[in-house]
Length: 404
Image (cartoon, rainbow, N blue to C red; front, side, top):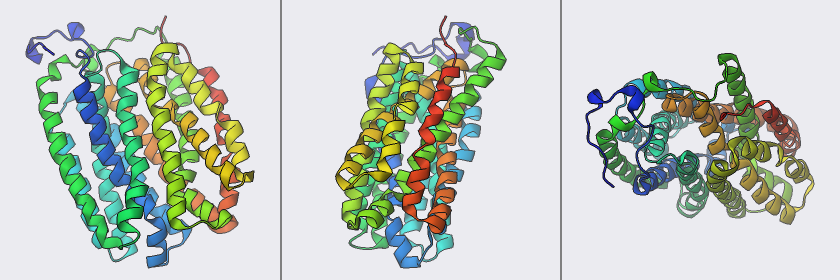
């Protein structure tokens, strides 16, 4: 598609459009990069049973590995987004992927719990540089279809998370920790892909409206905007505290309650994560059509009956309920991010960084707390307690309309 090459310095901020025409090849490339990024991240929780056995780790130490990754991934993201909103830098993406490559190679050779924590931290740092800028590029190439672009971008990540456990079960679990190094090839390919994306991004920066050009059209006061952002943060809290019980401990839950094999538990985790990917894909376009608030309301609160039933189900119904829960619960995140970006226009990177950061941060804190709770009371007890978290979705009633 033809795109104006007018230099950014010659364009009036008020006249700059907020997106280029729809460029699906760029959205698809960013989604593929997200798939590769999150596939590598998904390797970490997938090999927890092996690491726990090899290094005689407690559930608390397993939670600390997740906490290290999630905290490094979450704390930097808002600052990366805030800075690149004002000073976009296309090279941030490939440089972050190099950091992930270093973390993967270290994880394959780590011989102690401390080195495992360091490797997890490096992967987290690389992730923190990826999400704000990649989310901005997806929005830039959206042609105004922000929900479609965000959900396509996000479903790439969810697909990577779904395939991570399968690849770990096929490549790492049978042959040992050293085979994690094969995923360095995935990280290396990601570096090349992100460099190609960054070249397109560099030539289209003039089309992106920076903070100084952002104009709110919703007519809400600053107090109401802050209040809505707090509500969104609480909804992300309920969603990702519950999600952490699956991503970090679902395999342990299935092994303890139903005495399934590690390979079988990985297959069930894949089914859940595949449902998460599907729910993410449909959530964005549906939000474009019926409104993001409706999607948020249904996704968080609507999943509660299924989460409450899960701890009491047999293996068959546990599988069915996990798929339903994954699909419904995942549909909210794209809508939450785009809704927040509409509340605070001109801060696309910062908002993406904040909410991806909250996602990682809440997930990491939850993993550590739930691991300690599992050590004290058992893993089944964790699922019973977490089942009530989606009831916080009732707070969606407090969200204002963003369009007059």
